[in-house]
Image (cartoon, rainbow, N blue to C red; front, top):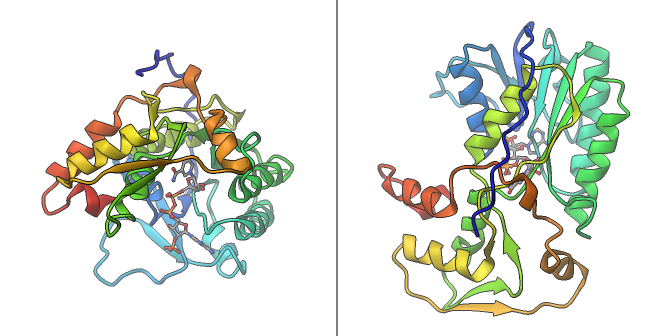
Length: 280
Ligand SMILES: NC(=O)c1ccc[n+]([C@@H]2O[C@H](COP(=O)([O-])OP(=O)(O)OC[C@H]3O[C@@H](n4cnc5c(N)ncnc54)[C@H](OP(=O)(O)O)[C@@H]3O)[C@@H](O)[C@H]2O)c1
């Protein structure tokens, strides 16, 4: 089902002093955020737990630091005005990391903290989502001016759900469940638009262009990588599968994404030396 597409709200463009720090700038979302900032001529600093790879000659600054301990955060934040917080290591660690980041951001006088979150975290009973909600609350109450964007699942994640099952004779899916996947570059564009505007609080959610059943998505994936395999929908008990069956993670009224899952898969396959499996 392709959803109607409401126009995204226009953001006001403000000047940004110093580099924009991207936590998680090496991740699935962070990489296109960094690219988009560079394309816009912005100064960028990437926060990573690892030292900068020697072969990396990209025109951005690199700060080694760890959100789980707070090490390196003060120097990563020095002279930055804006932070785009994309890092995640899952569950409680995200809450602790966000707490340390907001404390360091307040000390550093950060003027805008932008956070990427997920549609339905307040409705779907899932530990990771509870941690995202708690992280949102920390940011809202941090005293640092903030913006929070919630989106639906990225295409990459939906492809990965099938890709990790490549050694199984069947591909398992959640019965009675749909997803509304979105292209991560479109999320990155919106985050950059928000980060270069005034702090806006919680902004309108962003969903992908189509809502499709999990088995249908899995079949698309299998077709795109040329693999023949039965798809087996499983009806799982429990609160999380029930929450997903109820569609609490979907944003049908905010289907602003443009790139469909099939377009994502075909682009991934066309990429030189990179199959849809590779990118996932
Ligand atoms: N995936 C989805 O479908 C989806 C949908 C909506 C929203 N989101 C949100 O989007 C954000 C990015 O997700 P993603 O899929 O891009 O994640 P990802 O690919 O798993 O990347 C995670 C990033 O976090 C960094 N990181 C992890 N632990 C860290 C730590 N202790 N200190 C500093 N950096 C740390 C990693 O950097 P290093 O390894 O270089 O240290 C990496 O760059 C997350 O907040 C997620 O909840 C995801």
